[in-house]
Image (cartoon, rainbow, N blue to C red):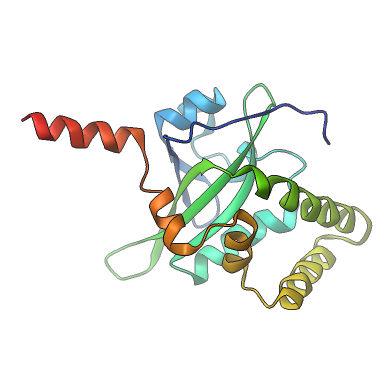
Length: 191
């Protein structure tokens, strides 16, 4: 899997997506479109899998949606793909969007550059999960992932923060850095 080209995200920008509870893409911002070269109309209502790199384990895709149903905020790692089939590694903050009845209506995803030390660590786990899926099925890969986290005595969120070497407080700050938001604040200061 090492022959694909992985591009870097701009550390000062955030790619933003909104997906429904079944994983269909409802919104993507301009940075996501320019990064991936997917036109917005090409991905709206497509399943989230459509923008994930083909070698991302199925169990990790399922885990993303499962976590969204139980946790208000989740930190994730994804291996996304561009229209040219290049890849990129993203550090993701996924939050629940609630309706007036406090029910989950969708999820907002903010995607930033994944710190380099995390890529080799997560790629090793992804490789194991892909092999288990290929040889024993998705259910077996799910059981392995649960055992893996249990052995490390970590929740999924804590595992992601551990792999990225960022604590939750630093992660919050990391997702506050957005070139678009900085420009908006500067513009307001001039009025």
